[in-house]
Image 1 (cartoon, helix red, strand yellow):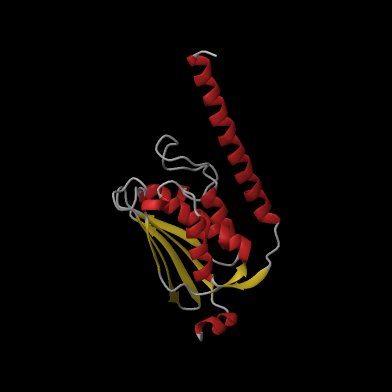
Image 2: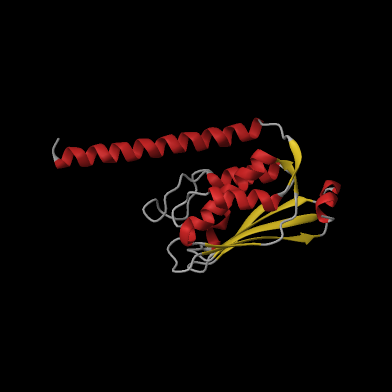
Length: 195
């Protein structure tokens, strides 16, 4: 085949792969609304360390990860894991063009709840459009800048809402972003706090 036909085949292949990812993301989003929570106490430190180890997002190899002392979460392991994967992979992706990309994951106590955060020093966003971040297909950056389907943050929001928490973001163009989510404190956390 000639060069032009080869180029067209590559475009078709790339778009077919992208469509497959989008369909998978939409199916995951759809199932999230019907899934019953399988509650367990999750060692969040171990979960996040495993996510960072397994992450295959481009730019991970040069990213500095700072993980604070994360309090355990009582919730559905699979769903909370997916939420952290989406937030951490986004942080890596949007900071990957920095010379020294950095992602910080922490949690603090705020009354009867824990507030977890995933912070990056990347591209950031204009706060005027923060309300669009968690909508399906709502993206603040073009596909040419950063690949994505626009479903990951919607999934994260649905996970946190199902667990009785809330999620929000703060950012500034060129100065990074911080994604926060809250989860209620439960007595089952006590066994981890004493270890």
